[in-house]
Image 1 (spheres, rainbow, N blue to C red):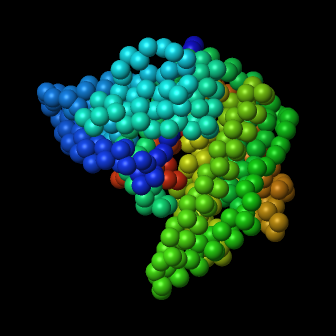
Image 2: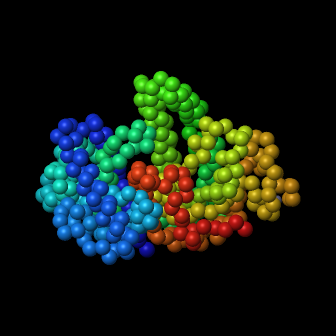
Image 3: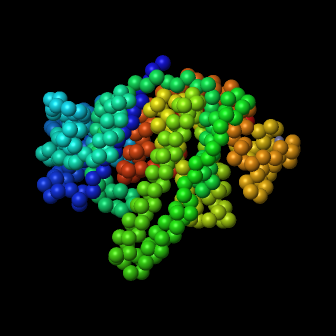
Length: 420
Ligand SMILES: [Zn+2]
């Protein structure tokens, strides 16, 4: 069964860095955004009974929004029910050579390296299309994807608090699901211990590995940012500015690492024809870890792997790789189910049956024990939320966001395994 998968490419423009003729148009864009959000909130609250606005640009925006609402789960689930401020949805055209401009809201013009935004009552807003974005667009095209819509909004970035103009180009493609033969068990530890993974085929482990960010560099950058923060409190600028840029450098470093790790894992799953099974710690074990005073405060930032989990999930769906969340306990004995005792050097021992192993090896043992059950959950893969890849990009960026790292998008109930 083929499914549809979505993926968004996010373009960000610092408003103060835009040419004056573009900057002039931002106040009108903000007005349209505000008016539209008021209408959208009413419309959603009334269950779609509020009439469509009569005049453009609101009428155009409402029509495109309702269309996207029916198509995209994240819009229904996050943007509106959770009270988030919705983006402006526009129809979009991708120009790869000399196709006629069919005057949609957004024209991504690859040969001219420009993105044109129209229909917002501001006059055409022309923005540059960078090298990296162009490369990614061409990659989506090679994968057989089509540009189906664009989301546009003005908001503030979390790190620098600078106002930015965001354009998300949303691609869609038909994807043939991978029929899994194996399980790629992924254990999302607190990131300082790295992500450990194992490719499991019934009762054999075919491959094991770990991915670790550069923890000492991260901790160093965190300390530097904290120093600058306290200088900012005492002496103001330029330290405040330096603190903000230190934090956004740190954020980018983590983000880049996460994107790379997600790619590597999904690539491995495809190569080994494996379903991805992610062990997601439950809330209580996370709370325990966060409240543990022995746990260095600066490392707590590394506990936020919600974004990484969503990246893996979205990328897996884009490539038709089945994705399941299940508990693969690191500290529960996979042989007899008793709670295991933690020993030095991350080893664990079962007091009941005597099994003693490195804790990173335990999730793979759980994957072996539950192999048939996990394969049933992964097969046939569900496309219940084919737009997962959009959510991680957009949600943290829109104001009124669910905090990153919180499990804001619950997996469908069928793909969760209860603790046994
Ligand atoms: Zn045991």
